[in-house]
Length: 127
Ligand code: FES
Image (cartoon, rainbow, N blue to C red; front, top):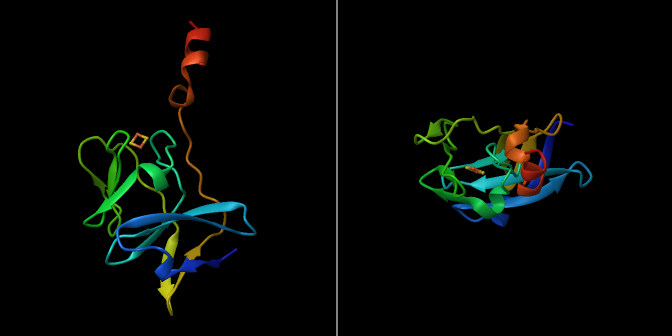
């Protein structure tokens, strides 16, 4: 794949996030309109895989996952605050003639620690 049309710019209002499917409906891409631009990324928080479409809040170019307050500046991709421990991975993104494109060679996925994925049942089962 390469530059892939994800949506119309007007589909994502300023300071909101919206998930789309590309690549024949197999790759989820979250588009963020942070006011002065757009960003494209996997739809989950790099901390504990929370769906950012639900737990993400955008204000002043900063995306914050409200679960544990990890945050990133979407124009510089710098980590914000003291809680954030991992970088936010993004696809290159551009707007052309009112359309949003992401450069997608393959789906970006995070590696999560096993203990972060563990639910209560499996935690107690192992102890
Ligand atoms: S899951 Fe997003 S900050 Fe923890």
